[in-house]
Length: 447
Image (cartoon, rainbow, N blue to C red; front, side, top):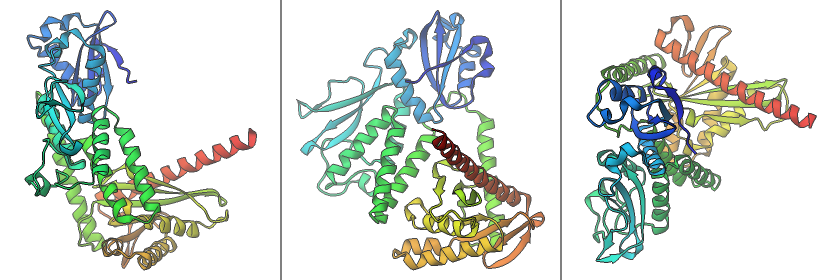
């Protein structure tokens, strides 16, 4: 169960600047719950730019509670859950069902579920008959809820009415509707996942999708696994970055920072394309490292940067399967072969390897060998387009597949920073996994 972290009202500056839910406490009672893109700035508005409603209670507030959600959709969902749980008296303007918003998932024609928004639960009818309806809510802001559903519909297409025409509708052509003849079993599974997300069970849904993807991969159903991979990535992106909560006062500094980061990556990407003689757009870079002590407890790490920033949801750990011998080159070959056998993970444009010419050659050999085992033309093109590079820290050189080596000191600062950041992150991730295995091994021996 989510718990509020509390700070005294005179320590507003200690509040986080992230998305989440906040509350006001008076005499150990929660009197108001709200959500925000930036908790600190939103709470400041209550105190320093109070509305008429704020003036009813703001001077009585003793403590401020907060829960960080990491995303704006998460804040929207959690706010609804907590208001329903605590029923704060100064959220009373929404206590009437007519002012709350609920998501209704009802069964329409042929028992096919459809989604709608309603003010009054238990009063939704289909053709004058009571239907089997699941209500999720209450939600406070109708506009935010509509935008959330619009975004989630891209991940889980759904019907919005009890009937669907015999032919494809406009929403079908936009991939937002399952169409006139859906796979009913799959569609109902998606509706259950949608309901779980709206109830705040995002991790449960992601775990389920990843488990399904792994099963399909093991069965060599790579096309189906790829579809699930795309759905997982889309859902993670939606839950992390979708701007669905209306902010009362736009933070201009935040907007400018976002534009700066975008332009910064565009500049870095162009420099990278020039250095690597790479014509295609670059968004995904993977970096690999090996960690072991004389071949024992050997592990490999794969870290992923998207548009120059770490995406930890795509990181992978490999426990080396070959015999415990101190052969980092062979271990690297094993890790790369295992990674390249997973097209559902999505191939990168660049693979960066920690090491010198031997490691670079292993990377090139692994890529070429994987092409012999790939039958789908799409995956074959993606692998063929991967550029293998390695960082030889001893000689302070960047080695590039098909191009001359470049001294690290001659790299533009943006590229140098990116390469070093990738390499450090891969090393950190490998070491942490290696230490974990070592500690488990020691505990096992001492048990």
